Length: 540
Image (cartoon, one colour):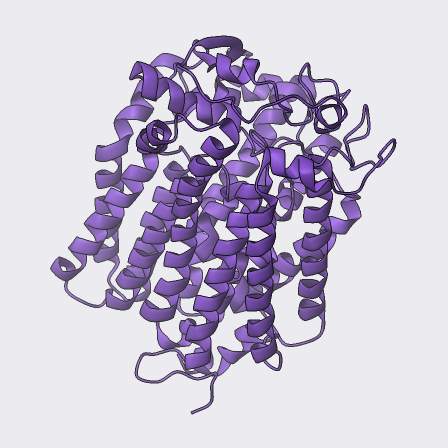
């Protein structure tokens, strides 16, 4: 049997080994990301951390538009991320460059008890499950200085995110139909196709728990897909569990409203394709009812208090300012709308850390094409593929449309369309990567784009390290990395004050060896995991 085939329900030994090794490499790169970033450099970490601290110290979640960010952040004497409005290097706090020029001791600065500052905690819009899960770790790490304290919390968060990534890849490897098992290595390699994955998920934030829950959801979707022809009673345990998982998701983030509906629609579609439409309707209703029974109460409370089901800050503000139609009438700008959709696509593959320092925008096109080209091929072939190949459309599609709606809503609210990060789609890493694997085709273009993406990632991580060193900077009105006025390229001493660069370097070194080992083994066939499925698919 050739190494690209499967037998007796098992993927090839090479496929299994590659999946496990790539997962190990991804785990190590996540460790590097969380130890290299200085305190608060993960996106929205100040607000996520304040939420956890308020829960831990006061016993209740922050209230939207009422409760504030922690005063610990306002008192923190170390550098904070560069701003997102001009002038970028004048935020009222030290920047990495000003800290290098006038360093202060921060090694003994640790969290105190929650006290409010002047700034509103915008993450109060979210349900509390992730934050409640983080409270025990916060208390254990409370006495540590902020550098170690935040890295410890990031590590817990990264374990959740990595668990979701690993569940998605391993469920595909061991539970998917035989024709789909060769996709597993690409699911494990997803973070290396879209390098923003690491900076988006190896940080403090509820997206990590979202990915973990979606990893469990993908496993259950695979189980239900393979068992859909069984009697209804035999499908109910997995269906009920799927509803529970998405109910917990609803208690984590509003993204699970569209994800739950998409999963229910997939079950209905799956049963319809198997000539059992009534069964599909029953399964869909069970998933939705169970999920809403667990998490729906939080959304009813949001609607009662804000007249918006999700409680999202931008949506609430839009309603208070006259609604979508009035906002679009005042801010109709097709160019801004196109810019918003382009920014959402670009930020799927690269946004950077919370300082949002940019490379030349054209450089992002390479990794973006690495994903968009296979996705386009997958879509073009979808009608000929078996039902499981449609799962990404149902699972990712509703969330994608929700993000598109946010682009439109933000344009109506502010006149700017560029405020919706595409990296939120990484919480659905398994179905995203599965779709890419089904559209992957032999040739030189995609391997060349992947090599370019690897070089792009190395270059951008180097620039991030240079910025954290106080060497590169984000100056005045230029949002790009700048070396104007720099006296260094990378300052390891400053990196060691703000993080653990030795751990990051060791993790990256081992990860690089693992990735090269897998790439060398798959070099003759790496370009065509999608094509290796073709013989099986044409027989279905």
